[in-house]
Image (tube, rainbow, N blue to C red; front, side, top):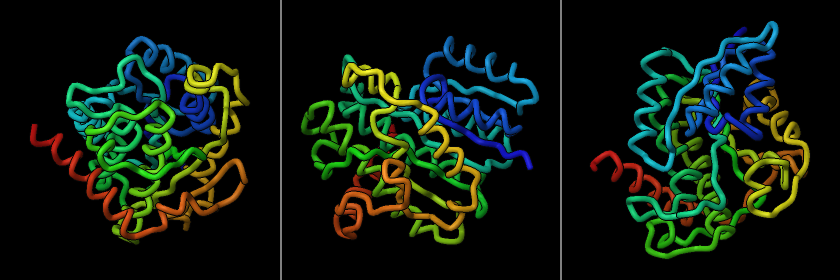
Length: 270
């Protein structure tokens, strides 16, 4: 059966490779990107796949939470149902890491934007849907002051903290909604894969991005993830595993998720 699948950050890297695989299987894929030119090129490429599924595209800058809300509105206006949301978009090193609101762009794009988008699209996903959140093997204790924009971090520290915060809210949201909503999983797609992010951060070409795309395809479609809501899958180990110990600490999770929710709600009041 054809599924409707939204993939953020799907104009290159793991996101594009995942979209390519899912379109080839006949699914309807909703592409997202920040750059309209790259988005148009990706849509043309995937639409030309022989025997492939349908392709649509949506442009939004996820560092601007107003545009995240607009993205959710646009998807909801065109679709009554969404089977899978893959929150793939992420940033590591950027020329200016501070947003117009004074926040670290890594926390906004990697943590808060996917939270906002997921929360807004829950009614479309329903009980049978899935949310796949791109985590990382790089996870570090979250400095709440940095999350709030009060402390500046290095690229690596901000990235690792943002990915742990993402993993924390994934677990908490899965627990909160239980059987009333979609399965929510956090996935490390694999370390040092050949993405633009890895090239910029480490100056290396990295491994085959199809390694990451394959696990995202499985997380979106396969039975092995159907009952895995709230869990973390480590593709480096090839199995479900425990995330960073802070994600297993209810008190720490409460604090981080409350901070993420506050940023999400603040954006809607501006």
